[in-house]
Image (tube, rainbow, N blue to C red; front, side, top):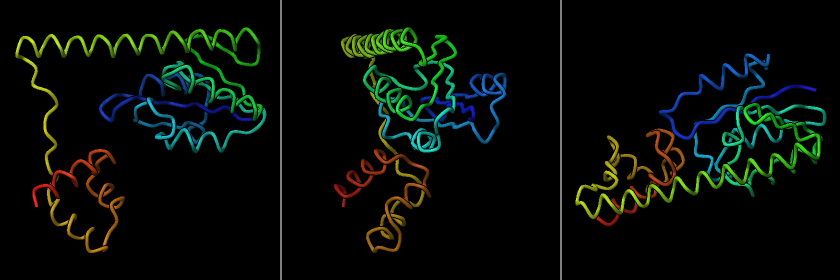
Length: 191
């Protein structure tokens, strides 16, 4: 029976220190802390969460700072917690004081998960409204165009000659999959 802590922030620029302090406060050993800097929108795009889910066994405890750090919508939250329950793992969200070993804890988890999703949906709606207002006022610039990383053409040519793979190019240039494919498409359109 071990205690694990899952830490997540949405971008590489965000700081994990606050969550790391929580893990230390709960005496979670460093090797039992799983941390990643990725969007929580899609649970399949979170490699550290995937690793953690395979390590957890019956009797283990999984702590998270808050539900929003673990899942961004109710469906994913319930799915993940069901997987944990099937394994006999205790899930605890510190901020919401939720312990899923009780029926009340599961009920509260569902409520807080729905509220977190509602909050995210409201945020997206406000963002869309703000962009529309900025466009009407002619002050919206949109997302900056993707710039080619240094030596892009060299790596592109190597990839096309099957010297390296696209995955290797992404790692070398430290770019995400979506950015990589946008760059490839944009580059090939210019050829």
